[in-house]
Length: 249
Image (cartoon, rainbow, N blue to C red; front, side, top):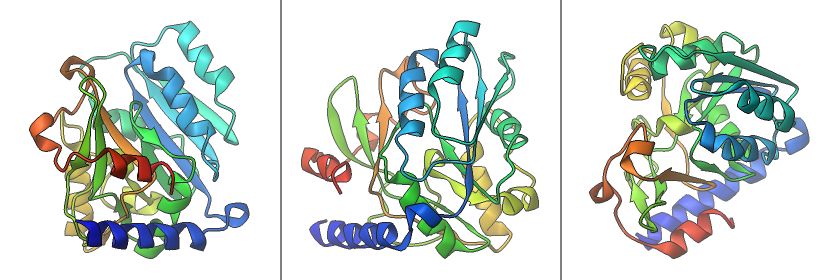
């Protein structure tokens, strides 16, 4: 475990050292959110990125007009903000993310979830991995998770190696706009649209780069508040020091 963590940290430092903030690749950011109680976290995650997005495209559900205005007023770290409203409950995550992509114009698209923690250097690091992927895409096959209701921190989705073509966390996907079009976008299914999308990418012969696990924490709270709930047994290697390292690299 310690050797793997050292390798991960070395890879993360190389990623940050390789991307000049003033000359970084241009990207758009998509978010689908159905939890207005998390609007402050959405704003913070966007505004603190050292490499700002060109377009932020958000699809909201269950938001009041006042809450939408909150997003419009407080999201400032982008060149353009697009917000679409879709309150139909039978339209699921994949289709909502497809809607968000329709407003994107840049060659690279990154996905954020509304409840996770994206360190200020998160996108700087992920842009490096996208450059390495070329026409393929990148995600994090190893992530650190925090159970916000239990205070439990540890590994989740752990491959424990820098091995490519591992289906990574959907909340960490970054991909070329052209690749999105080649695989036909996200599948319009209730759950697992992100995993199916990544497998489709691999089926087309493109790589899914396994990015380092740093600068990101996946969070889960009470079961009724999460769209994906792997359960406490899915979080392994309880290690508060590891999570602190993630945020202080």
